[in-house]
Image 1 (cartoon, helix red, strand yellow):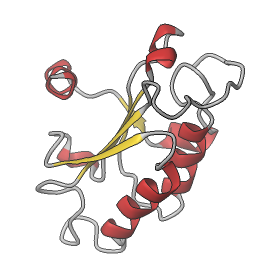
Image 2 (tube, rainbow, N blue to C red):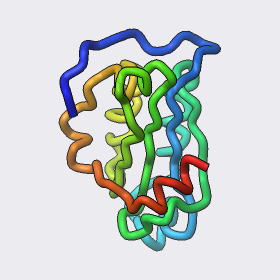
Image 3 (cartoon, rainbow, N blue to C red):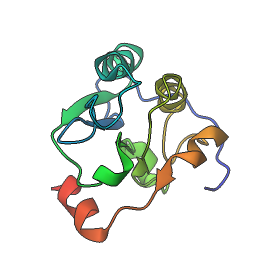
Image 4 (cartoon, rainbow, N blue to C red):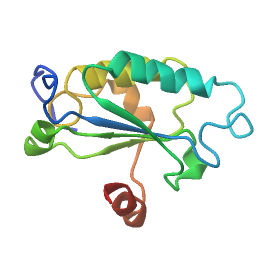
Length: 135
């Protein structure tokens, strides 16, 4: 990722970043990731980002081998500045939601540099999977 200057998060009503949280067949299940409170992770993201981003739950992002998967899509301004969706896998640490929320509050992709710790989670899904999320 390139270094970007920190800008204010989008104003309420502006096109905001979208945080998509997978909660399908593997992600969000105690059978796959037993040590994490999955509902608390989703609730934390929704609470922390209520004013700055849309947080949505989806059934399956088809990257089950990387459960739990979260995708951060840039705001309109972030996309204009070169931001692209960032896929995060194995987001199974309780503190990861805070790192994600802090980044999105600062603007997210295209507007703010992601915390270095998120590099541990970043991956590139297949083209087919990326295309399905955009639809």
